[in-house]
Amino acid sequence: MKHWALFLLLAIGCNVWQIEAEFFTSIGQMTDLIYVEKDLVKSLKEYIKAEESKLTEIKSWAEKMDQLTHTSTSDPEGYLGHPVNAYKLMKRLNTDWLKLESLVLQQTSDAFIANLSIQRENFPTDEDESGAAKALLRLQDTYRLDSESISKGKLPGAQHVVSLTVEDCFELGKIAYNDGDYYHTVLWMQQTLRQLGEGESSVVTQAEALDYLSYSVYQMGDMQRAIELTKRLIAVDPTHLRAKSNLHYFKKLLHEEGQSDQRMDEEFYQSQSKKEVDMRPDNYISERDSYEALCRGEGIKMTTRRQSRLFCRYHNNNNHPRLIIAPIKEEDEWDSPHIVRYHEMLSDAEMEKIKEIAKPMLARATVRNSVTGILETANYRISKSAWLADDEYPVVNRVNKRIGDITGLEMETAELLQVANYGVGGQYEPHFDFSRRPFDSNLATLGNRLATFLNYKEEPDAFRELGTGNRLATVLNYMSDVPAGGATVFPDFGAAIYPKKGTSVFWYNLFKSGEGDYRTRHAACPVLVGSKWVSNKWIHERGQEFKRPCGLTEVD
Image 1: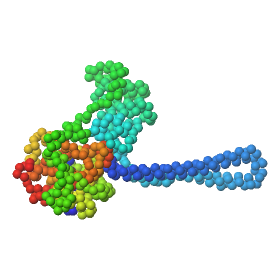
Image 2: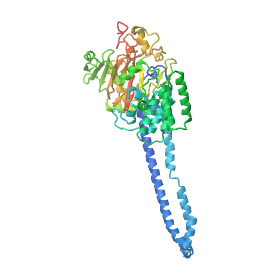
Image 3: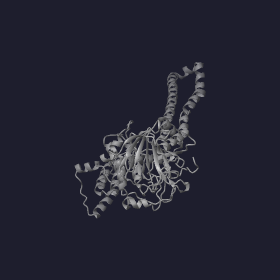
Image 4: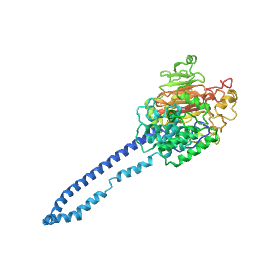
């Protein structure tokens, strides 16, 4: 491939927030941790076996000595009157007890500790744990899952059901609290109290959970309930000084607001204490609502009339030599903008080989900051990616040629094949694949309402230095099935396209005039259950002059 095919070529984003966590951003790489843990368990069992063997030997020695000293102390002089007993006493105290001392001091844990120290270099960090926790909270929001269902592992499509302990729920609430996310703090502290109330044993106390819960409810503006929860906290722990101070403060605020502090009756109070507050953050925008609804399968605008315009066909790209005998199966996914899916695009062997090549190269996926033009990680893109050149890997070369045959577009100016693996709750929030040029006239055509809806910002031309033009088209290859979640959605026109292993989805990002088609703003929904592998091929404008000529109007 050409030298210009740099790692710069990434999807264009908005403002970003830096986060450092790594492991949770790729399920593929997290599988390595499974084997790390398995090796540690093996090492631990070997240590236990060695320790048990050591204790068995010590116990045997103790029993033998107990029996011997019982005999010797019953008649010391008579016992030592036998010269062999006298010799053996000298030998035991001079030699045998020293051997026992060495045995007792023997560090059977050395091998385990050494292995643990080595493997610790591969352990996740605090940022990883926090990132995985926040991913659970993101899944909870997007798919509207209640805390109890998550705690009991009741997720759609899940094969390996596992429950959260009281400590797990409490830690999720604490992570949300430390992040200033009081909404989720309330949900998970309530779940903590619920499981404690069901009798689950834990080192976490009711007072600890109520402490976080009462203050979070106050932060969310429910003063009356904050007072009731604080009273409950004081009843559980009368020595809690901060709770008493908070209660005085809350009552003062309530009085200043002109509200009465009347105690709720017990039945109403209990119903309130079990209620899960349903309050969204202030920056919750309409596009996110649309995006998350589509991820849940809601709001899809597939009408009967539109469905009647979608067809399946065998596609040979105007009798392309390599497609005449083996045409590709093409299915319309959407009519306008036109989105198609190609079935049996990649073989199982090809997909496994591409994943095998990419896995060691996976690095945290980045987006371009719309203000600075600098590539950064962002909390709205949770995945890892690698870039594969077709001149280095025959399988990549074969796939790229196939894409060129099917689309009829020039591949010399296309980007490297980007392979991505999504992590825990892996997602990529609504974004454009193409670079939005300053004063894009097409934006005016679509109107100010859409510009506001899409949070449009001018940005540096990300591809100017490459000399290949903008991203004309996107080919998205699905390289795994996803049991739940992980759809590709288009909030502007209400489409949801679901991963199907071995298929590819294709659409144009630009009109024939070269203007951006803002309808193609799309998102990768969070992966609820499973591991999502995809590969992207972004095809650029240069070289397509005769393959996709300009239209007669701006939006052809």
